[in-house]
Image (cartoon, rainbow, N blue to C red; front, side):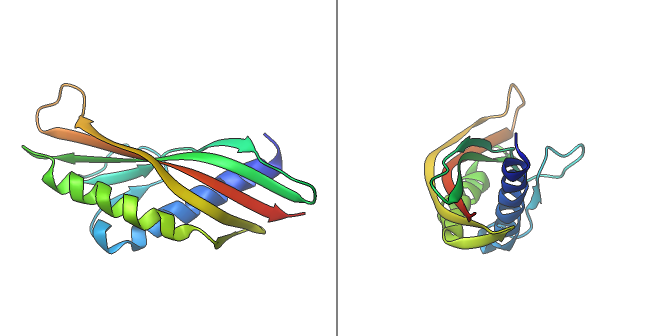
Length: 139
């Protein structure tokens, strides 16, 4: 990957982590940019985005697929449902934001959301929220 793509990846993840930490619906939830070695529950992890080139004449562009994973424990996933809803509603608010290095996050839209038991663990739940994003940088 080019340095431009690498910069875009780092800046996108940093912007998403910052946005999640600022969401009132995720107050008290630890947010990580990589899976934690030891993390309390609930927590959120912004996974590495999958980037594709979306450049045009005079403009560097990237299309990104981005996933936010949330994990919690409990007999029922009531709290996790609320956390998923907060991410679904809050992350699209990043659209139109300058994220650094000349990059602007133009669009970010929800593509799918899922909640399931985490493996065979009793009382552990995992949710994922996936977004499609488009970024531009003026050349």
